[in-house]
Image (cartoon, rainbow, N blue to C red; front, side, top):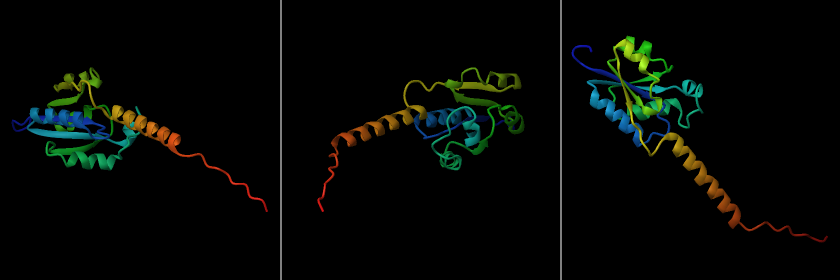
Length: 155
């Protein structure tokens, strides 16, 4: 705590920004006097899952456009030890799909909150739905188009 203000950090990839991202950021905002949001770089995300659909710079701009964050910063590592020390973070909020991963921050005096996404939308489910719908669309197109007919010409 600095000047009696609670600093909360939350972070994520925020690819294909959706309502669960917004809920987690708003939850973190509710805990914070100062809310810092980290956006994972493309290089970081690519080190543990597929490269984001939305480029890093655009994901940063999307999060910066929200009214909840006070500060938006790039996130270059999943180890938050340095950021906690440099920015005097009091609490960390992350999706519960990372449950237990950040318990080490408690040793640094940081409260860790694993936000329950629950069922529903995720970037992975959105990508899967888009792919399946596109695949169905292509299959339907193939079935409805007439086959081309070659005309033989006699010279």
